[in-house]
Image (cartoon, rainbow, N blue to C red; front, side, top):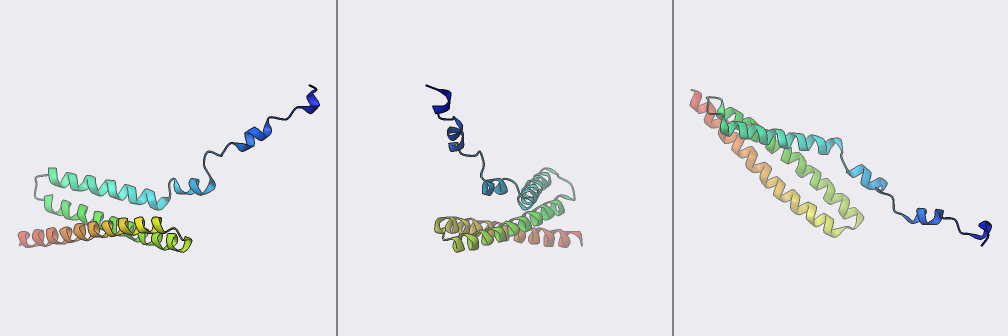
Length: 129
C-alpha cells in the first residue's frame, strides 16, 4: 500500500471526548462555593472550640458559631432556590426536586442554628446581670 492511500490517524483522536466540557469547568469551584465552604468549616470549628472551652466565654463562642452557621445555611438555602428556578426553567424536573428537598432541609438547619444562637445569647445576657 502506498503512503498516499492510507487513512490518517487524526480522526481517531477527534473521537476522544474532552476531559472536561466548558460547563463542567465552571462548576468545579466558584467564589460562592468557596465562601460557603470556608464559612461552614469555620463555624463548625468555632462551635467545636465552644464545646471544649470551659471558661466564661463558652456561651458567647457557641452563640457566635451557631449564628454564623445559621447565616451560612441560609445563604446555601437561597442558592438552592436559585437552583430550583434554573432547573425548572430548563425542564429538569428531577434536579429541581432534589434541589428543593435539599433547600428545605438546609432551611430547617438554618432555623435551628439561628434559634439556638438566640437562646444562648439570651441566656448569656441574663446570666451576666
